[in-house]
Length: 251
Length: 221
Ligand SMILES: Nc1ncnc2c1ncn2[C@@H]1O[C@H](COP(=O)(O)OP(=O)(O)OP(=O)(O)O)[C@@H](O)[C@H]1O
Ligand SMILES: [Mg+2]
Image (cartoon, rainbow over all chains, first blue to last red; front, side):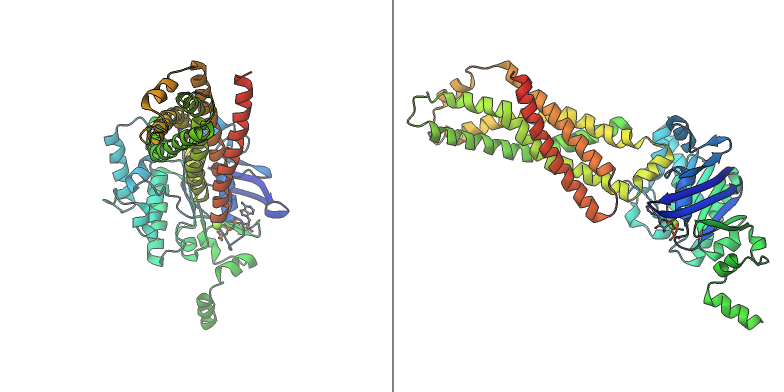
């Protein structure tokens, strides 16, 4: 469980986050949604501690990330996996070395045990046998999945995904969403996902936080999304011309 | 893990820089000897002094300073670009999230490798410089082999070698730290990366020259 407590963040005189309070629950896929530029990535980076909030706290169970010292932070981070918006795979290492990297850093397993773990993770993201390829030699969707494999290799308690399916076709997106949800359920992980993909919202939106210009505009689950009359939510969800046409023809 | 990375860096810095260090020192030695011949002909200075002059000039000043100025351009810009690229592609953030102490993991091996390899390179540069002087002057008859070797073996002061190693250590430390700093804290995009890499070289060079002066003052006082 992660709790954001009145998070404010500004860059220069630009107020990006204006008081976010939200509970990200364990064993659920928690979604942060909102328009481009609404502050999703900034919020995620504050949650993992890459940015410090101007004021506010981030509680990991009962540890405050904002005031934690370096040692505590480092220990905590070994339980954190993150998929970056741009993947951040190490391009001078092959896939196997990428996924093995956290194991090399933090475990004393033998190479054979580590590689077994790597194979297991690659199997988990349905990419067996690409161990020796380099990140530049595989497709964008495959890179995302390798990113997820690397994020889960240390069996994290907290998983962060920044736009896991941006730039992917709808079918691959759904596969990745389902994969993340399965992993979350299997290991009771606290998962936070940034997205502006409506399919993801309706598919895995168990606990949703809608950001609008740095303010929390709405929270709820996918079942409440369609019932709720909140205007910002409505605008966000029915922005696509396809849906608007559909609604008009229904009336 | 750190150990493996340090070995890789040592190989890159040491073996990777040998060709350029070789090329530069052989020419420095050659030019020094030819110009010494030009300046000293017609004076009363005995010609075997050539070996002595070349030896001490390379050991005290030319080998450490020129080698490190060149290494700042080769190794320093490389380090800045490597770290800067990792920063911009969020590799460093990704490692931080995993709990890696990135400044230790990425920078320490470079510093250790530099501190071990740069003095070795400087030492090689001094030897090759003297060899270059020999090759450029003896076969063409500016000096005899006996004169040259007599000079190289005259008035030897071990303290000068100590001074060379002090310079090599200090310069190596400066160029690695300046370059890693410029790369590690880079912001923005590819233009900024280029600028950081240039700054790494320019700042290293200025600091190396300043340090050279300070060391000369302190160690010869
Ligand atoms: N490092 C930074 N320095 C200054 N301003 C920043 C920085 N990072 C983000 N911002 C600003 O914060 C605002 C929110 O950015 P953010 O990246 O969180 O948007 P986002 O919701 O993730 O958008 P997208 O869906 O396009 O990824 C933007 O206006 C951006 O200009
Ligand atoms: Mg974003």
